[in-house]
Image (tube, rainbow, N blue to C red; front, top):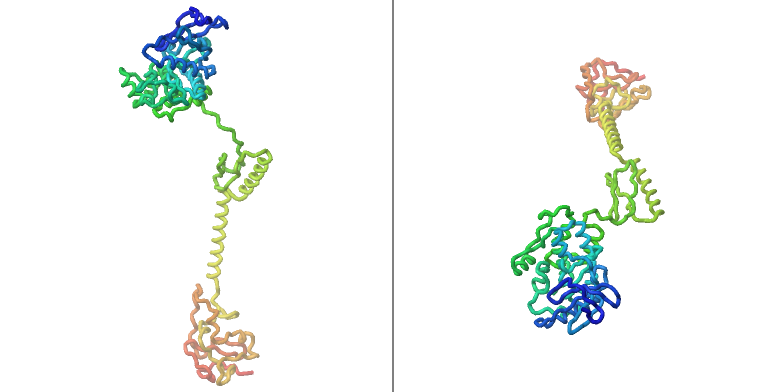
Length: 481
């Protein structure tokens, strides 16, 4: 059959509710094409409008992972759509033939499908029917998204031509928000893609039920079983976690098509550590300093708590200056700090304190108990008496104190005056025992001062001041020369 005088139909390769797909040959351009022919629609008045919408939608897309539209027209009251011919099979045929696929193959298909959906979403187009039968493989194994028959323009809410209360799409891959009757968005396509990837890995869709209502409830309320619990071997945890993120119940929790395409294409699904942004190398710490850590936005400190240089991503000259400053600071730290230096300093301070304390105790202990400079060591304690008895030769009647005789010698001149001894005598008694005081004898004087110096009074019987020698019982008077 020659259609429109140009396309010769060869063999039917598919059939759906709206039309049938033929392998055809374009005699004008001499190439093989896929021709989709709309079936007669007696009960669905919107079928023709949807078919035109599919042609307009796919015609706006030009991407390696989207089946391209080549022509659109009408022949014998039947609309037809000419598309790029994909020689391979669909993912539905792959699942029926080989079952589950390895993670490496599924990750490659996921990257290509996400890239095709990202191109459609960038044009404001939501596919709304992502399923294995609409994901085609060419002879080279490249995935292409086809069948935009129920696609929807985001900027035209009426373009979907959906009947009231009718849910368009396949129930096994339907997003939860669409099960609630909400409009489909780009996140809805990502949920459907997650269901397809889940089936490619495990061989079964994430949710299954006997009725459509029960299936919708599972999409709304049930959490999918992790594929590894179903016996999927060789699936990296990163891949599994990302897949479960695509199946999130809330649309805002799912990654976008562009994010998923980049994530799978870069190999992040293997769980390899992602490279960090380059930063300036940290300054080399000195050998005597403790280990330091530094990074952008944080100060580095050593174990001693002293601040160190902040590692800025500066030029070579700035790094040289910073390194010189760090070297000088490390040298000063070596001269000051360290646990050994602190121990030596503490020991030195303790020794100095002990030495000073010992010196003070010794000075206190060995201070002599003398009444005045030049006092005889065997002088009796009576030298501290409040009143001294003047002799007849050294004092005149009515005088208040003794007078030094010029001819008496140095001993008499050094005798302290009355009332001055208490000011210089230490309050603490000397440690040595005090010699016993001599017995009071009338014939023995206490002290001679040269030739006739004043005699000390008897400690037991002090004489009144101003006397004329009374009480001097036969002692040597020491006449005046």
